[in-house]
Image (cartoon, rainbow, N blue to C red; front, side, top):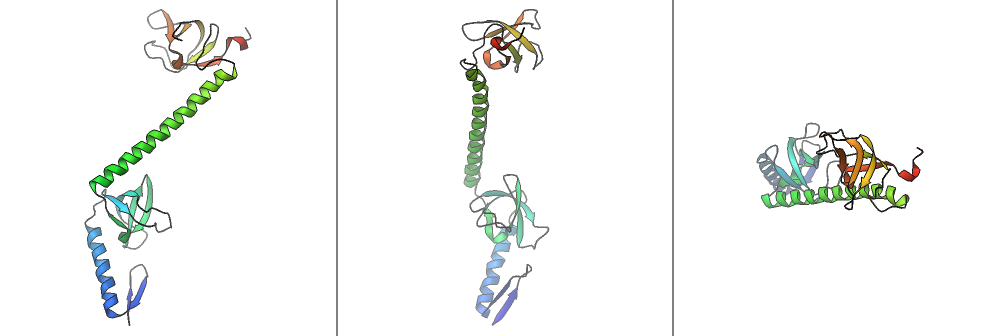
Length: 200
């Protein structure tokens, strides 16, 4: 029987042939790892050193682990750093990188769409709770400007609604940069107080 002790303390015991096979295997892993450059994309198989499932994930190679043995690599996966055995990473193909980036972009878009939907539903609830349709403004409502393109006014200024046209555009009692009354599409203001709730 022969015994092989790795730098991380792992011990292999077996026949000389088995130890030779293990040595060849690790030599192959090291040779592939040496081909990696910091910034290369890698595909991970298995789990991280601290048992996080990373199987099939795309990561960015950051070099050898500083804390652990040289048999571990540092890999960034979606902004989080992990320590992974070199034998569990390989350089990603261009197709794998493109697919993973497309999947991430799709996820980010779905997340942004969901967050926008929640914001929209919250804003619409303000109107429905008051017995109005979404973005239904009326003369006398007090509004806050949230988008002031073309008015020359500051975001956040408060104004009273003086008129609402058939398209739902809101006209206010505040002068714009040209001296006329500022008006906004209904999605560029938000309600402060509805006319039926005003005390004055």
